[in-house]
Amino acid sequence: MSAPDTARAAVERLRAAEVSGRPCAPVRDLLGDTDQDAAYAVQAAGIEARVAAGARRIGRKIGLTSKAVQAQFGVFSPDFGVLLDDMVYADREPVPLDRFLQPRVEAEVAFVLGADLDSPTANVADVLRATEFVLPALEIVDSRVADWDIKITDTIADNASSGALVLGSTPRRVDAVDLPGIGMVLEHRGDVVSVGSGAACLGTPAAAVAWLARAVARHGHPLLAGEVILSGALGPMVPVRGPGSYRARLDGLGAVHAVFSVPAGSAAGTGSPEEGTRP
Image 1 (spheres, rainbow, N blue to C red):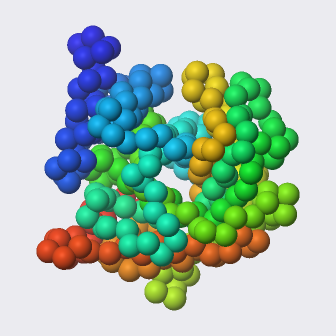
Image 2 (spheres, rainbow, N blue to C red):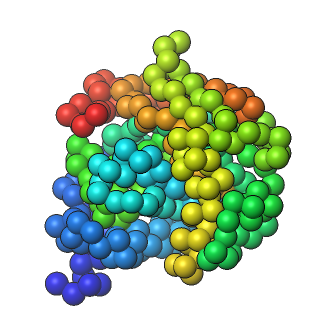
């Protein structure tokens, strides 16, 4: 099978899973376990199809910022995906559970850029200079691959396992926040389900954004003013097993809430969407 045919088959497999609500087999049988360039080509084709259907690019996300998760996938750097306008929810806005297949939630710092970050040698100082403000955020990660049985090429092709994001509503100047010193607590129904810190994200979330700026500039799609950047998890991700609210409290940034709801007549929430998945 030619490279274009392979990419098309991978895109169609992932798209069919999303549309049907039934997770699919991994796509590494088409792409191999390690060919990240081929996986990013699949990601780009999938995003182009969504944009052609009316979606709008609004930013990027960084994945695999945790050293432990990198070791799990046998890689030594993060990956990235694209954020679209139909993925964004406001603090406390109902998030329909039935749009996801196997959702998990994690707390992050969102950077909103006031200037382009278009250098392939961007550093932390460049990130701080270009950032207009930061927000607390919750990323809802999701996989179209059954049982989260993914390697690096599977997650990259699947837009870095993106699902949605919830943005807090109180901006903070980046120079007013101790980014590596941020403490994070994620709660569900009053129970603490995840804790973490800014230092867990490549030492500081600003370093993660610098890595992203360099990586996407080399791919020819630099970060631009106005984009929202999810900088990576501050603590372990948590499975979402049904409707309810998750609250993340980030020191110096405030709180943000993801409220998962079940639309009337929906079958979502009747069982665990994470049944059979790996921890």
